[in-house]
Every structure is written in structure tokens, then in C-alpha cells.
Amino acid sequence: MPQIEPLTSLAISMHACPSVYAILVGSGISRSAAIPTGWEVLLDLVRRVAAAQGEPDISQPEKWYRERFGCEPNYSDLLESLGKTPAERQAILRGYFETTSDETDQKHKRPTESHKAIANLVSRGYVRVLITTNFDRLLEHALQDVGITPTVVSKPSQIKGAKPFFHSDCFLLKVNGDYMDLWMRNTRQELRKYPPAMQKLLKQILDEHGLIVCGWSGEWDDGLRDALESMRSRRYSTYWCAYGGTLSDTASRLTNHLQATVIPIWGADEFFSQLWEKVQTVESCARDHRYTTAFAVELLKKYLVDQSHAIKLNDLVMNEVCRTFDRIKTLAEDKSVENLLEKFEKCAQICATLCALGAVGGRWYEPWHSKTWQEAFGFLLRKSQSCEKEKAIYFCCPRVFLFYSFACGAIASTRNDSGIIFLGDLLRRSNEEVMQSHSYEAGLTIEDLNTFMFQVLGDGCAANRSRVLQGAIMAITREYVCFGDEREAEKVVYILDVVLFANKYCRSWLKDNLVYGQLGWCRDLLVKEIEQDGDNSAWVKAGLFGDTARECCKNLMNLEFR
Image 1 (cartoon, rainbow, N blue to C red):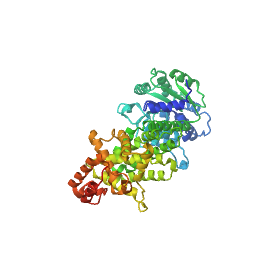
Image 2: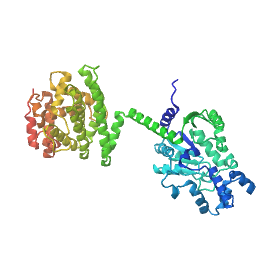
Image 3: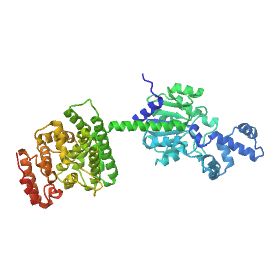
Image 4: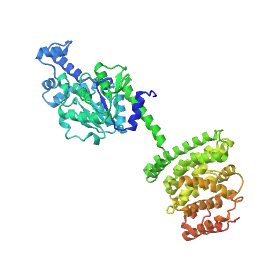
């Protein structure tokens, strides 16, 4: 069995099972924020009482209190004696748990890196339930900083009216109370056993969650220790952080009982920061693995409908453009595949997601999308123009595939003229020699289509080469764009052939590749459509065959057939 680092195992488990793990933290997590423990606060209050009574240098506050008042020091009793009203008691405690004027330039009593990392885990849904023995509010502050308002239970009376932890974005259980409440558990007697309502809630949480323990020794909180020892469920694992890898006898007994995995740490800040980083890494790897074509298309559809998503749309398309180009570049350098047709098939596989995005983008094109698609075509054009000559055939693949898929999607859209108009604009930009007046040098050189397929399939009818290319693209895109039945899908392909062979921006290619006979019916279909719509036809507005309906029809009918 491979020995996987416990922190790595935990990160993978948390990613696979979000909200399954509860985090239990003690005073160790707040140590770097200079927050005292409840016991330390009690002893300091005793020192203040002694100093006020003329004994400023007592070395054993607990013993002094016992001898002076005849009882054990009790946090609640002492605080109630010192402050007669809630406001007075809160004022006494505030300096222990909140930043004072003397500490404004320091990081004292502010959320530490561990608090922030925990808050990040909560905000991403990996953790829902937090348990703490601390009185401070650093967890609350860290959670608020990431937009989370937790459900906080710090005393038994709050349990009944609180939102259940399984319905909360974050449920924070402060088993020993909050410094702003009088109900705080400090002494051995107070910590020995929790009230029944608190015991019941704690047991339910522990039974239904895995557990991550950090900064808690298990020595003082008898009630919490008893709750852990009563656990019988082993549905999820327990991970216990041990400073320097060393556990106290009490913690050792607990980890054995819980069959816990011990993680050596050198501080809570380092541990939780590393855990958060590892979970992010696992999340990123899983996201890349799940980044299927279907997932990308769903994102695209979401972004296409609302202009407020313009930036996300651009990022999605351009990330896929760059990703595709990088993979094509790797293929071009792969000398193990020499057969051009085999490489063409590999190119088609690599460009699959880009083709799907292009087809859906063409199908649902709106004018405000133009900047994204212009940038995509422009990027691919510049990349292919700057490559070595022998690699040009591969580097023009993404541009060719994207153009064909976008064009098929635009032609298939029967209710949206914008895609056809953009297609004409794209072809015009692509074949103009000088485009310095426009910030996006977008498009493709139509001759590249013929050159590309010529090198793949060899000499012969250009229509056959076009058919192979379009067939590969249609096989990819039909899952994501409805082209209708076979006849309708065939019509889309033939119309694109007419566009590429007959539009006025491809005259240099047209001279050597006259439209072949079987396109005649599709040419006639276009003429009929243009005559019916007149100058309002999308084909006229696109300027693909002429500037008026009459000119478009005339130019189409003048095409020669072989």
C-alpha cells in the first residue's frame, strides 16, 4: 500500500466529501494572535484583584484566591463580583479579546492565517461545522471577511432556536461559551460535564462528521473529552494535529480510541494554510479533469445570454483557444506520428471542444459577442503566421476548425441574422491585406482551407477535401447544435460550401475551384431565399455575394458548374 502523506489524504477526502468534516479547534489556534485562554484570563483577573488589595506580586494566583476567599476561583463568580452590569463585565473582558489602542500597529487579536484558511474552506463548502473551546470571536471575524455569517451557539439556551447545523452555511459551536456571555466554562468543575442540551448537540455533530482536531490538548475539557470517547461511529476519519508530532497521554488515548490519523505540525497557521492550498490544488486538478466539452458548452450557453458575463465569455473562449493551440503545438513537434491523415484525426480530437464552442457561439451569436470571437480568430491567425513553415499545416488547424464550426452554427440559425452578418464581416477582414485600422486582426485566409486539406488528402476535387473537413466538424458539433435531420444538416454544409466557393472575398480561390454540380440545388435555394427577403436578407447585409439582393442573385446564378 502506498504511503501517502496524511495532509494530502485529508485534502483529497475533503474535496471528495464536502461538508463531511467538522473542525475542532482549541486555544492553540489563537496563540499567534496573542489571545489568552479562559484560564489565563481568570488568573490575570485574580492578579488584578490581589494588586488592588495591596499584593501586586503574587506568584500563585489560584492558591492566593483559595486562601483569601475560601473557594476555588470561578470565572463567572469573579466576573460578576467585579462588574455588576453586563456592560461593565464586557468592558472588563474586552481588552483580553479585542485590539486595544496600544496594539493597533500589531497583528494581535486579529484573525490569524489559520482562521483565514478555515474561513476559506467554509466559503467553498468544504466545511460547514466548526467546534471551538475558545471564547474569542476571531473565527466569526474571519468568516465575515469572506461573506459568511455563521450560526453561532455559545450557550445551551441558544440551541433550541438556532438553525440546524445541516441547514446552515456555517454552524459554529462554542462549547465553552463566548467572552461576551456570562455563561463561560473555565474551571475544572465547569468543564467536567456539559448541560444535557449541549451534550446532545455535540454528540450528534460528532456522530455525523469526520473530525479535524487542531490546537486542543484534551487535558482540560473533560466534557468534550467524554463526548469524543463516547463516539462509536467510524463512518468518517479523524485527523489529529500533534505539535512536533508529540501527543500528551490524554490525546494519545483519544487518538487510539478514535483510530485517528496523527498529523505532525509546527503550528496551526502552517497546517491550515497548507491544507487550504492542497484542497485548492485538488480542486483545480479535478476541475481540469471534469472540463469536458459538455461542461464547456454549458458554461458558454450561460455566458452568451447576458452581456454582464462578457468578461467570463471572453475568458472561457480564449482559455480554450490557448489550450487548444498549446496541444496542437505539442502534436506538431511529435515525430512519432508521420501520417498526415492520422495527424488530421488527432487535430480534430484536440479541437473538439473549440469546435463545439464555435458552433454554439455561431448558433446563438449576438453583436456584443463580436469582440470575443474576433480576438479568438485574431490570436490563432497571428500564431499560425509566426510559426515555422513546416508546422504551418498544424498551426492553422484550430483557426480552420473554429471557422467551419462557427459558420455551420451561424448558418443553422434560422431566426438570427447576426451570425451570418458577422460571418461576412469575418471573411472580409480575413482577406483584406491591410487591417491596421482595426484593433483585432481577426479571421482566416480562405486559401489556407484548401492548402490545409490539400496537404492532408492530396490532389483531387476541392469539394471532397471540404467534405472530409466538414464531416469531421459536424460529427463533433451535432451533439451540441441542432442541425435538424440529415437533409437539413447536409443543407448547412452545402450552403457553407457555396459561401466559401462563391463569395466575393474568395475570388482568387474561385478561379481554380468552380462550384461543382451537386451544389446547384443549394445555390438555387439561396437565390430563392434572397429574392424573397430582398435587401433585408442576412446574406445581402453580410455582403457575401453582392451589395444588393439583385446583385447577389445575379452573381450566384452566374456561377459555372463542372
